[in-house]
Image (cartoon, rainbow, N blue to C red; front, side, top):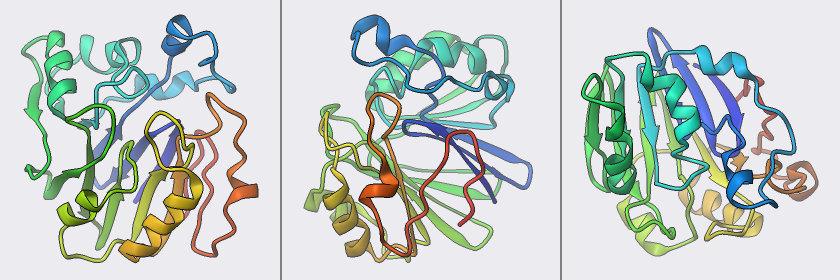
Length: 226
């Protein structure tokens, strides 16, 4: 499995012949709405030319369901499986009928390329927000999406071991801060912890905050070695 952090909450997973992109934000759209939300590091435009087999949108916020980024993946292609939580699903279907748009809400499962994707609950300001769990190459990966520490999240999780969890640490916008993120990872017994949602719109230095031996601090547009 090759995993690349795209910045913010975006990830690229590559396994076998399946490319999975989650919550890509490779523009500066948020800056146009909020002057404080400008990119602290540039997007690597090489990742805009990748055609995903599966595109996952965990909720309908601009840094997760970004029209400028989605144009590159959906406007001039066809046949992408788009797993989108309810509110994001309503928005992304505007890209036309050439893709398979699946309303991917809490509790829904969808199998593609031998991989079963499971939507789980996320406690966020989008009332349809989700996290995603999938298994590939013998490991279970859990991308929490934007979420707070909430018992409903734990109640929605399947009874499986989590080899790696990818979770926010910025502590704003209804996200966990790093302390709650570490409690979260400990509670689910995650083998590896990969923080995200930091460093793009803020000056958070995850290396200074997180010293857990199982934490892997990602670098934008570089492969994450778990």
